[in-house]
Length: 153
Image (cartoon, rainbow, N blue to C red; front, side):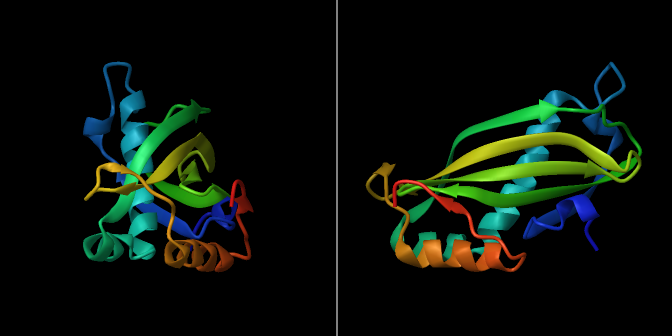
């Protein structure tokens, strides 16, 4: 069961903080947090069955931008839960909010966002998010009673 802070996140991934995630300052290196975000982002995309949709249509996801706000230092040993939810839907992109919660610290250690752009890999250019994927995104968000904000639709 996910931490209560992640109750409004339809996708939550649990993982151990490993010794190799830390740097010489004995806390998790800042670059590793972006890998944590990537893990939950890819699970979000997997739950949309977007990989099969891409195989069928050539339209897949590509990361447009990402950011993080570090709130507390994370150290080994620990177990974290990483949440992802869509907070904004555009015509060709959506913004995922990420939240990392530490079990040891019993709280948020990092907040972040990632902008995922629909990309036509066959034509090598940005694409509109197909209606089928929009439906899947809305259905996934609805599993926790949410509806993402729409912009430019």
